[in-house]
Length: 215
Image 1 (cartoon, helix red, strand yellow):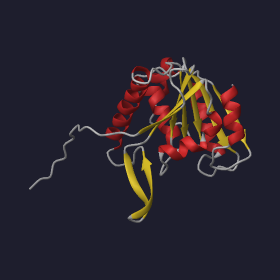
Image 2 (cartoon, rainbow, N blue to C red; image 1 turned 90 degrees about the horizontal axis):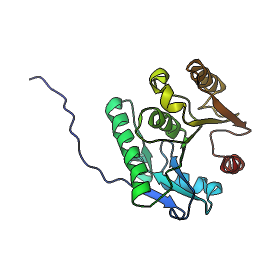
Image 3 (tube, rainbow, N blue to C red; image 1 turned 60 degrees about the vertical axis):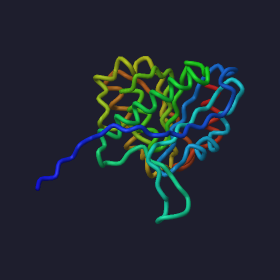
């Protein structure tokens, strides 16, 4: 007998961590973690961003797994290559929901900066290009611009966003070639991104976070 595959929409319970007083803040930063991270780990690494003027919102990806075997530390992933189009659509809807929830339920400012680290960088690019949320500033760190993002179609939306790319000089996952390709693709679409490079590897550098918080 033939086997057929069907897609069924279901509800999920998401975990979103918040640091700061949303009502007192002047800006909202949404932080997207990397592969095998958790939201709390990224939030801890982004401590230099903490400020009374800023609320930090860290949604956790919906696919959790054991990092080693069947026990021990747990991480999360935004997507894999399996059913990738559906997973992208799901996390775009999820992140749009997070932004709306932050504004409505937390009374967080609608001035949104998104910082995506590693796998979260690709996630952030797709959200900025394809999501329904208006993003004022996009910072991608340790990850390139995904090849599936059609910049021609997304140009008008991304042109309203301040784009910044951060790379460690010794980052083996985000090579200088990948960075150059991202910058070239953006330039070909008439878009410009500020590039910040630091002496480090695939890591979040406190000094650079502090610099970004002041910019």
